[in-house]
Image 1: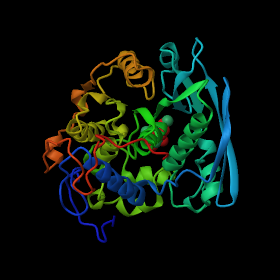
Image 2: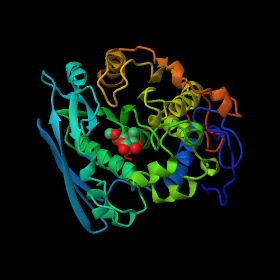
Image 3: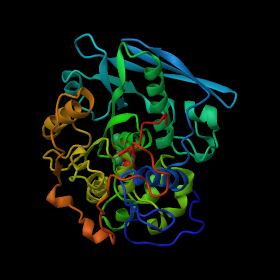
Image 4: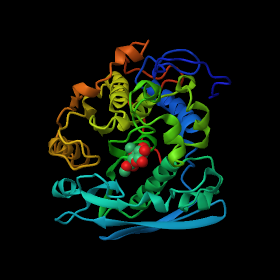
Length: 387
Ligand code: MCU
């Protein structure tokens, strides 16, 4: 695959169904290749590269903690996360909760799902210049790595999943894992779910600029955190994003396609319309745009978006999100429910997808990819990879 040599300005959201060679995908299987293109664009222009699983990943899973030891490039590092199990015997599904902020952990545990308390700052520290990034990720890949903190945090979660997969599954189930976090950790949860197909349920909360909201929407959304601010406040985004903070229209990718990268897996996006800084209007467009890919894949019921909330406190635990949270946990982690996804957009921050797209949503057939030789039993969605 060759990435575009020169970038052209496009005020509309890039067509998620259009391949880099200019043709549009026609089958559900084609999405596997198109998703890979989006992934590579997002790494190159937005977040920085996510290295593949390192040569050596080892560690332990106990009823109270997970340790991760990693070696790559002749360097070694380790980090850990604490575990809180629900009542019962297990093995349990689990949600990785970024830094505890804003997540309704009592509802998660009450549903019979374990909480893995993940401190992303040990993997990618805040408060450093871009030229001297710190944390477990950067001790392996270099303090001058151009990969931003969000992707470093995502890489850390992927290594936790590696260890759980290798653990034999007597305590935690690697095939029933979710991720959540609020605010800057909502940005992290969003990127984590997009880039690891082993994650069954992704739940970003109030992620704001640099998270789920479409980049193209930020300059025109009154009071939202400017892209230049999100880029410079912390090295969350990759260094390459610097070229786009003044004009996101030249980005060959936008966040509706990161939403689409999660498809057909479970996605529950929670946003706050009461704080302009959080860019919920642009967030609604990301959800609506990405939902078109979910629909085309026949998975329209797997995405939820909810910004219709009363209390404007940033990262509050909210009564409105409790039932949909339980339904998402049941459907995607516990496998005991099948509730349809819910889209509830606050009227005060409702974006209009029609304003943002010049493409239509195709009816994808179940056929074999147009770009690959026929197989006898084509997959309808991308198989899990060891991301
Ligand atoms: C929404 O996430 C961020 C926001 O991007 C920052 O500008 C602000 O300083 O912090 C928010 C946050 O993480 O709050 C906990």
